[in-house]
Image 1 (tube, rainbow, N blue to C red):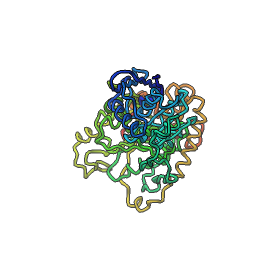
Image 2 (image 1 turned 60 degrees about the vertical axis):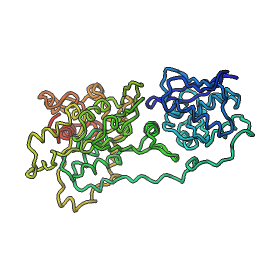
Image 3 (image 1 turned 60 degrees about the horizontal axis):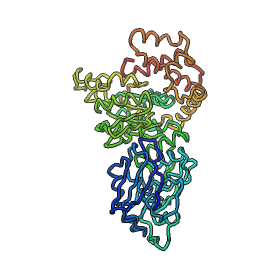
Image 4 (image 1 turned 90 degrees about the vertical axis):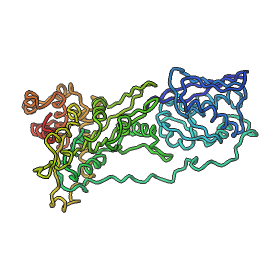
Length: 515
């Protein structure tokens, strides 16, 4: 007997690491041992592999089988190691020839069929980066794996067919049964086009529409406060339509995260449109931020990466859920620590918060119908903490629409017209910030705002006074400057003027009245 050696990939967060699998067949009584920090699903692979090999016509040895997953200190989880372990054992028994540096990622069914697994895209990306371009996956995962540049992907439906291609004796193999429904990787055609809600559907709210344009142009965070039925949710749902398509790098990042969440299909394409996540206000911190037993999984904040995270009825969320968003709003990344390990997920999203002015929602305008006491109103909005609101660039107040605005529904600018201006503003940002490796105005650090992009004192006088009086924090000061640059980009000017800074300050203070 010889030592069998194959390769697979272990995912920790969105990062993948090559795992070398050694298999040895001893001379003792029958047993099957897997070493190297396997989780429960991986430990169950022993029975899946034995049955799959038996039903494929290549039964495993009745002696002791030891499979060692290297590095031993790296936690391994999931059923994606099934195929690599099976091939290593078959190599050790001389049932197949050497597989070289091929990476195997698939789950095995008891009948020998190869089943798809989650996270194929980041796993194949990790394999290619590590110098392992040859990848074998289940046929249902092949289209997703082929999205990775440089990967040479082979998709199989059964272990028997794979063993045949690697030199197993065809007289022993069970090659005759048909694939199960869903094993075929053929697509029914191009995916159906995604319907993008149009901004022209929003009645009135000209100031709010302008604020959405500014938010889209500079990737700014947004709070919308107003009574029920004022159009807060409609506005938020139309923000992704104003955003430009994702580039290759961004689309790959987004698709990789959604692959981990099983949100892609056999006819997968790179996700070119910015994602939109709208979790319910009863969602737990693990659902929003990420978590779960064992190694943590991505939550809504990571699924919204490069897109929009919309929290409707924001004061109804748990305080700890809202405050947990403060760190990714600054860093664009979520690092989640659990006893089983640490996972890092990208989370550079635009946060949109929507809130009623009070628990009953009627404290707008004159507020004569409101039944809430001043204490109830303060307590309700106080659920949005000051440190969180300080990270929100635009704080907007919307009112009920008038009859004239309602009857004029559909006469406003379309999403396409606004998106064209947003794209022009993004081009100006790219030209200005590209040498600094910064993508949008919302990401410009304070040292750049007060250094290479410093504005003259007369332009920022209103901000200087607000900072001196304590109306603005230092963070709020920088965020108003970023808004000012976005307003200048939308107007086609090279630098903001005093009017741009004044408008930016008004956008930040419209709802809260504070910095």
